Image (cartoon, rainbow, N blue to C red):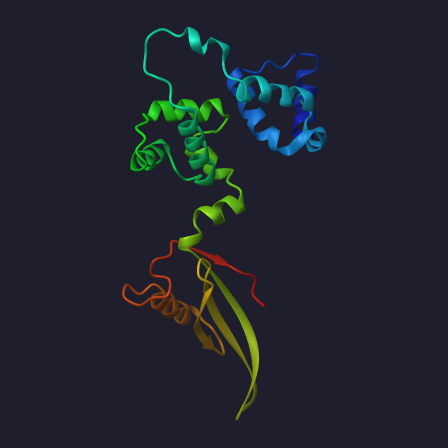
Length: 220
């Protein structure tokens, strides 16, 4: 990214880059968590002080002109705005409608346009872009109850035919730490994997019947 910015600088030469307020908000929201030291290592278009200054003026500080607005819809309470931001950050796949429904369940009536405004002011992008940039830790926290992890490993067992290597597929339910041995076979193939998948997702007693995601661990 630094090299790309360097090329951009070379193309622009001495021309000054002009940022819109929306671009400043987005850069400030992503740059503030990094801190001054790390910003100094990655920032090439502007200085770390500039990014942090944008955060103070465009995000942390209230807009001075808010009290001069004419009659209109009442602004959302600060506590509700913080709740909107929290929902968006912890659930990267939630769009405006999903956030609106969750707020309604909690007794807060907020329009989609107000939700869009709140997220834009905080430098948070719409759902498709926000989901692409979701941190792995955030994804795990948001989907912990519907997430399972699978692991395929091998063990050596002494049998009447001598030493035999078996492949073991295990599944763990992350929210409860329950473990299920899905299958053991000397030589796994496509048919065996298909049958294991059907068993795990069986509608009545499948171990993963209520799971949406499966994380594949490194085979050992």
